[in-house]
Length: 116
Image 1 (cartoon, rainbow, N blue to C red):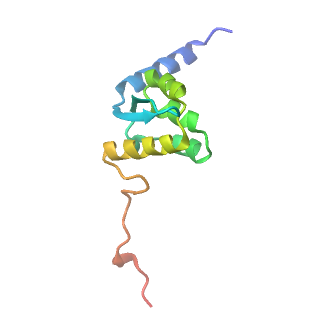
Image 2: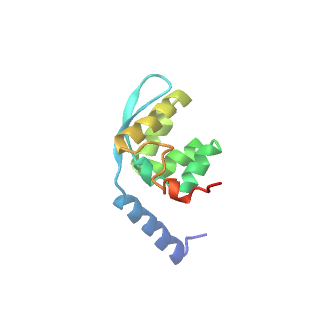
Image 3: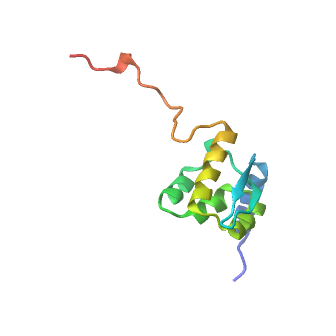
C-alpha cells in the first residue's frame, strides 16, 4: 500500500529535523579492534525515549536514533562489544562537554529544608 500524503510529509519533516541537528564526531571501536569515526547527537540532546531504549537494553534503537543517519550502517558493521559501546557513550559525553548522570536541574538549597 502506498504511503499517504501525511506519512510522506511526516517523513520529510523528520529528515529535515535530522539535517538540522548538530553532531559530534566520536570514535567507535568494533568487536575486531577496528575503529571508525561516527557522528552522534551530543549527549545533552538525547531524547528521553532513547534513554529508555538504552535502559531496556535496546542499543540498536538508541544508536539508530542518536547517530547520523549515514553512520548507522558503520555501527552495524563494527558490531561493538559492550565495552566498546560504553567507551563510545563516555566519549560522546566528554566531547559534548556534558557529564552523564548530572542534571542541570534545581539544586537543593538550605532555604527549602524543613527545620525541627
